[in-house]
Length: 336
Image 1 (tube, helix red, strand yellow):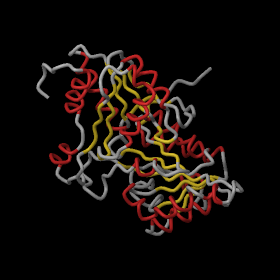
Image 2 (image 1 turned 60 degrees about the vertical axis):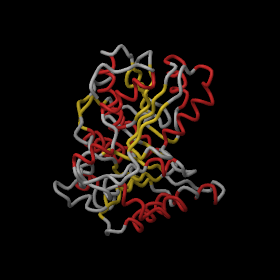
Image 3 (image 1 turned 90 degrees about the vertical axis):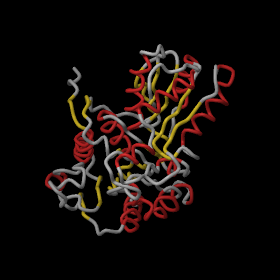
């Protein structure tokens, strides 16, 4: 008999995934800055809470403040056969270790003819919403999805956080695991089942419009869908969960039903992953589309510190409602 789902916040779901994976596989280690010393001893968002007490500081390692050294050391440990998790406080700081990710971890299997793999997970957080300003609030997932050899995971629910993190650690490929800093305290049911990378989630079923969105934008798209239902627009929402590998078949199936597509992401709109999803859909479903697909993203600007300006840069629920109505050719009766 399956155990009933637990109600957990996202940070606790991530913590549970790490505890369970470390218990199952003694070869797993985690490295990062202040994993055992910040606040209650769980990193800045609590995800590594009680890890050092349970598994010891040989497997839960505090490191110097050097992302370049940390990511490169993690890649090397993974190449040597250790399943390695690296925690970076903010995804913006991952850029300091870009060479270790892009030129080393992502290319090692190819350059050495598959003699070894790189089971490395780089955990970090991105996104806006809590006033962290321009250097702590970027959404950089498209950058990593562009690099051959990297997997990119963007969980938006507690259940996905648990299931995808365990799958990422089990993967033999280097994986960028980007949490959302504004969602850590969102709570939901967690079944504790593994979720395969590359399988999208249908977050809401509908028949008039497909919205593809991740993380905070999925949450806002769900809010927008409730508003749109009063306008007579029935929205289906697809959460890709992983940007690479990406599950286009679920999107194609939805678009063939709704005949309309809107892609929403928090990353800057220009050159974002939304364009990739639209391009694939147009190529595959051109004759089944009733209107041109549309995309939304953040303005081409750094994320401001001011709460009011930050809100103006990133798509809001009201923005999504307006764009959705434009996509299906409806005119809103609401003030948005």
